Image (cartoon, rainbow, N blue to C red; front, side, top):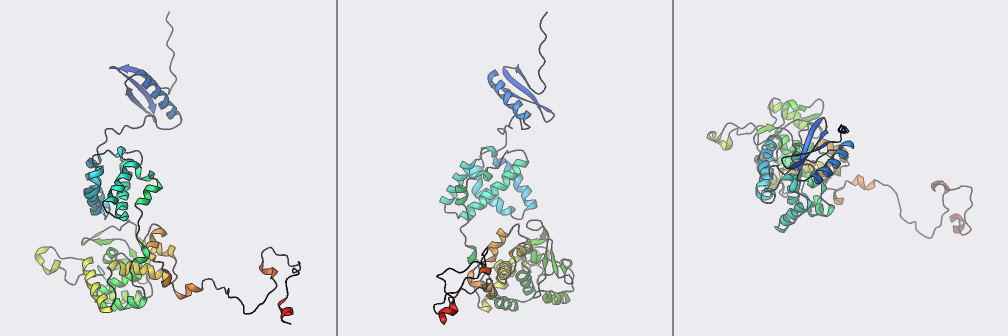
Length: 414
């Protein structure tokens, strides 16, 4: 009587031949999986590795990304999704079209590694692009690769594994202390008085509350709590329409004493309803045939009036962003404000980002900060040797006598 075949142990997998190829099958995560190989030896070795990995709680057979679409095929869908959620969608589309597609478009996501990324970085630097621009390209790819991992087209983000030597190639060389801003409160007052309304009030909100340009133009009166002394930043204006904030995270900004009376007076003049800042000429360029009436002031209008105001005040020309948001951060730090609090007021993810706005220049520190450590280390006149004070020395024994070579100052004078 033939011997009965021995029953396989549960979880050990199975090995069989089908259509000239050897196939292994195993259970993982409650599902039956299989994979084929050209010969039996390869199949047996793979089955042993798979069953061992499953027993350890790891993934059995790594996913095969050979059938994944190329980056050129995946790009349109990703850029379309990004256009709905990020305000830099136009910049992302431009980076892909002008720089990234030629180098990475033909590759699958799994084919991009640290070596290829370094080749791309060195190529762009060789073309004369700045390290800052190249850094934007790499961060663009990193964000995209993270999205591809979630969609199952990639296992790991190759940008996250770049060595330090490679990351140094695209580190920004810009000196943040050289960023222009209004360096004195007298300059802030002069520019405010030189601007006509409503641009002067918008300037005050930027320079005294640290709002971004779009956040300032997107303010409406329900966002202004004059009694509670705060501004609720919930939205911004972009391309003539309201949209989510840069990081889609609303925040609360305190109303400083210098800004409160300006907004109180502005509410009386405007009636306290609708947007804070409405265009003087609601139609595009004064021509009704070019579109529907505009509800919001455009940034280029702010720049135009700021340029005139700076010329009247005899100040160097700077952008609206530098004259408002950068000025607010710099003056906050110069006058002794906490950089941690400033980071929250400006809506930054960390204080490292805030330090780029703070412009910590030694020649601009407030006078009171120069007395932060009030100690006098000046040497006394004459030759005077004093006894060491035991009470000022940590761990000193007051019962010990002074060494023989120590002379009392009074005795020396006598």
